[in-house]
Length: 108
Image 1 (cartoon, rainbow, N blue to C red):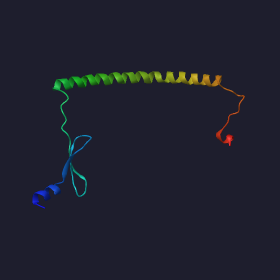
Image 2: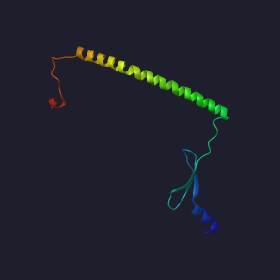
Image 3: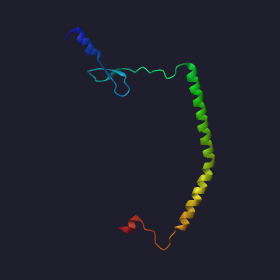
Image 4: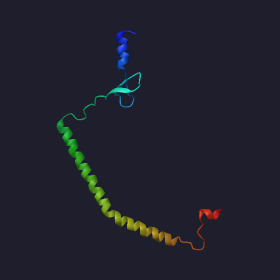
């Protein structure tokens, strides 16, 4: 082997990750990842004003969702009481005392 080929084998070889498209350098002997270089991320906002505006809008949305969850939590106890009362009423209506309760081991 020449020096150039030997150094490239010792350095490992590079492959691209199919999931994140990152560049991975693999050691051929140990088959381990030596280095990981992530794919460069493109900018999502044109300028800082657009990014700040998006963050403010996100804060407003989070606050709205929080208020909705607080209101739902306040009414939760009443809702559960109504559901329980309805279940008790239904159970009393469907109660059939003429048949004995059968358990699984009674069927053997």
